[in-house]
Image (cartoon, rainbow, N blue to C red; front, side):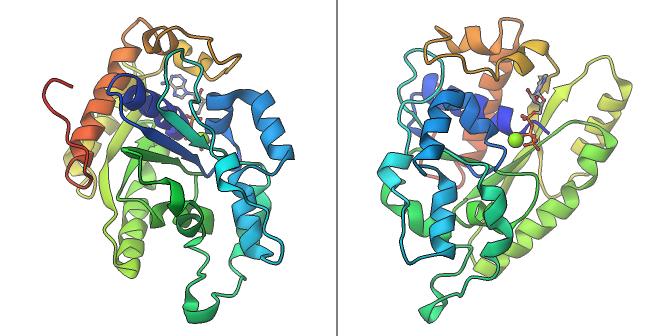
Length: 283
Ligand SMILES: Nc1ncnc2c1ncn2[C@@H]1O[C@H](COP(=O)(O)OP(=O)(O)OP(=O)(O)O)[C@@H](O)[C@H]1O
Ligand SMILES: [Mg+2]
């Protein structure tokens, strides 16, 4: 829990504070990241015109009349924070729900080159070069759509609430991704676990975090902990493109802005092992 909020907040910090060129890819049929970044009205228009990632997957299922249009699907300068100019989005659609099961049955094609886990990779290759960071918001499962996201990832982040049930599945997730990474012979590095919705008054949270920090051997836990705050939950409403003047105003004056900023710094540092962007001490 906290995947979408973490994705959007970190993407905005990387673009707005560090002036990196950032792309968010929304692979979740719930379309939450899409709604947070462009709002319902713009999303509905895109969805009616089939300018979402669902169309890319639908084309793979029925390739006779492809309709996916990469440039028209790519939304530039998204977010409701003014002056945030280097954040783009590939939006999702509820229609992704319907493609999940059908993807497994598509033929792999000549030379097995059209494998269903390569659909995203093939579909967006033409636009990814200029980006410093690509953040992919995944649904809470390891379906073929999620595997498409992992297929193009150098690393992954696990946001979690620090309670017993939320953290229970983490070893299984890291194990499965490791096996997938071995199978495709591409490294997909666990960058870290993000503690979200931390409640300072709950001893259970402190106990779970302590255990995670001590025993999690496959993925380290980031130092920064995102607190449970009403303002974070409220900020999902898009309203209009100039709703907020600054990122601080959007994420909150009571420390949350700094926490997401620190998290973004930690993620940059972890990612510098595997990608070209090298954070300097001044940025
Ligand atoms: N730090 C926080 N404090 C308060 N509310 C939060 C915080 N982080 C997330 N939320 C709220 O909790 C809910 C779930 O968060 P989010 O959508 O980021 O999780 P998710 O992992 O993407 O969920 P899903 O599995 O449904 O995709 C949302 O309503 C969000 O606004
Ligand atoms: Mg989500």
